[in-house]
Length: 441
Ligand code: NMX
Ligand code: MLT
Image (cartoon, rainbow, N blue to C red):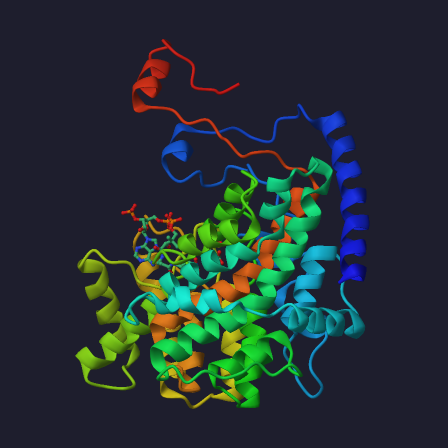
């Protein structure tokens, strides 16, 4: 832990000095213009956040500190005999900005094991909810109950100098990442497996141990968890879960409060909940068509029906991407390797053929291609995890890696309270008539 923290401190100090120089020389340079439509339409295309951990290109997809997903699969350490990257390695990369060695990753795995204790009151808080509560509701309650453990909030209450904020934010972030798999597995076993809980295995890696505590011992499921936890971890800073975590953190809310806020955003059907919506939609299609393997023609008709009912086709489209999401492709490759004959996985591939032409024919849809959520559920169902309401919790455990690495950077760079200017339509109308100004100071 000490070594990781020292390395982070060293990197952050260099970056902070660099940013100071950049702002001194270029702080007043203009980076673009903002149209009225952008203000009304979700701020698409407005650059307004710094997030060091990853960068999204509309054509190429995500790069983590410059590395694409295939490059991560090649370069990040793996378990002996495994072929998927260890998410601990991605976390190191996002936090430190360098590829880790096998030893760096082993150190993070054992640090997370050491810090993984979840106090009993957290389980009691989850138990206080009806078992029928959505798993994301239980997950957020679990994270909020863990907040009693925050070092940052205790130290802040006792009086802490600004220069020390980053250190207890860092400690909290490591604790939280270490504890999340236990909380997630507890919710899964409570809701779906008669509350028969499984003890952690201290010899396993972070994602392998999550698979074990969920009750899946198949080595290829563990490999899936390693891939899943890697590819869902970060998608630059503007997506709802990352932006919310960053925004709430900017009020100096501790990592527990900030992540819980981000997870509430992930629980929305246009964001992370789309992974459950995809499988639900496919199951409903199979039931309605009374076949396990609908043809492409049948899928096309079903997509048109979904659209005619005024619903979205889940798993398709994106606010930034304009090509097939490389996270979809990585999962498709996993499917081809481990379960090429699975009828549900094949249906996902048939949907990939059928949906884009239909969406392309609707001028208003900017991206007809699949996103990460179009594929993930089918892989989980293959291993027997059919309880699709749980899927977004898995997304959330992974997303914590990226947004908490970013939160450490936010505090280390002393980024200030986030507070953009808002306007009223009344003021917009005055501005149009040259009777008022809508720019903030
Ligand atoms: N099915 C039907 N309509 C769509 C779809 C879709 N898959 N994608 C976009 N549209 C509509 C969108 O609702 C909007 O309609 P309107 O003007 O009537 O409000 C119009 O097309 C223009 O939207 P875009 O500018 O292309 O997309 P936007 O940036 O607004 O939204 C999503 C992006 C991701 C919210 C949208 O594509 C969507 O709702 N997709 C389905 C849900 C989904 O898969 N979400 C997961 C995203 C990934 N993640 O994990 O977070
Ligand atoms: C994500 O992974 O956060 C989603 O693809 C949504 C986004 O990037 O806006």
